[in-house]
Length: 333
Image 1 (cartoon, rainbow, N blue to C red):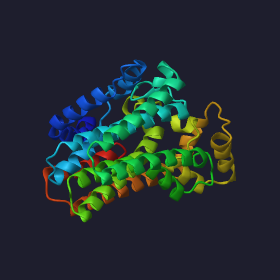
Image 2: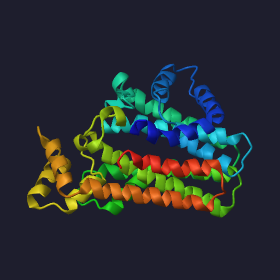
Image 3: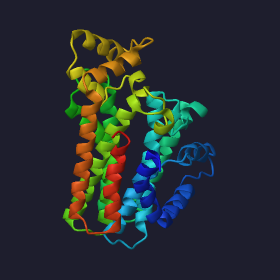
């Protein structure tokens, strides 16, 4: 068995356990992404939604609801809502980042145009709000609405923080909590709320999603400097080329001498990038052990996620979520 086959097993097991529910989620997504008047909407949406994504976030909602014993129909609506919010943010992100590849395929803005990506993303956000209202649960509506606002706020914060060498690790975590972890924690929290779980269990689900999301993003940032294109679904070094001050770079900058700081200022702050700069950036990350220390941070957040689960009922799904926290960081260990 190869390493890749081995680390995929937790996600595959969770997917198998939730397969019937995910079929219902996918059917609802296909139904709600349709548009009678604007055929470009399902074209653009299908390009991304049908691209083979892991559907991790909606699975977290289903898993949380099942773990606390929910037996109603509305976790399907909440899971679809989570996926629509996620897809909308991806469409907008690719425009902001001027990306050309997503999940190993050309981005929607490259195949169509920026206007289509932005407007279809807006449509999916609107659809997500229609969906989140249908369960008739004010608390889940509040959680998902707040998460949507937090995600947008995190993206705006990143616009300024990502290219400022004064950005600290605390600000980085604040950005990550906005742009990534907010939807993870909302996905798990609404599953507990719709299942009428006790307050301590709902909090545990929130904490799990929050820590898992932060670990997930740190790993993505590490892979950008050390992963294979076919593994990460984008080009290696994209974050550097897009001048994003991610955690490994923040750690390297903190230890940089004057010459190294000048390099980071030229390439990240001023955007003056030349041939060989990516290779030099990798050398600096290695020189200061930045990748190793960031990897330790990801492992610590994964451990926090697993600890959070201890407040939840003994359940096969809980074991899968524990393994999932290990899986998220296994790509860089």
